[in-house]
Length: 131
Image (cartoon, rainbow, N blue to C red; front, side):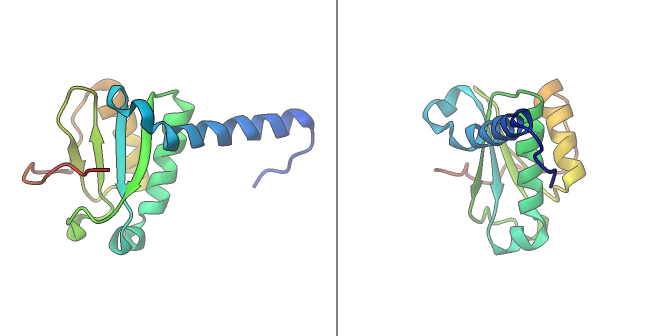
């Protein structure tokens, strides 16, 4: 963790944390935003979902992506953990499996920002996760 040496450092840290919190708490108008749900059941956490979620929050915040990043329980894809469901406004949700920290960065850069498909999609034989 970086040491805070001045008031400017403290304000910068506060703004970064506030941006991360906004990504997790913007649920009021989530239908008009990109929704990212990270499965954080026991199997997901054991496979690295916490780090994946932190990376997604950091990437969306630094790239100023209008998104809500939340955690959810088991999606039922234990074999493919960590799993991430991404729903773009007006589109069906897509679930990605085996999401590493590097894959999370790729999802943000390619799928969210540039509408490019990324490997690791779990076929659409599931129901979307309700809040």
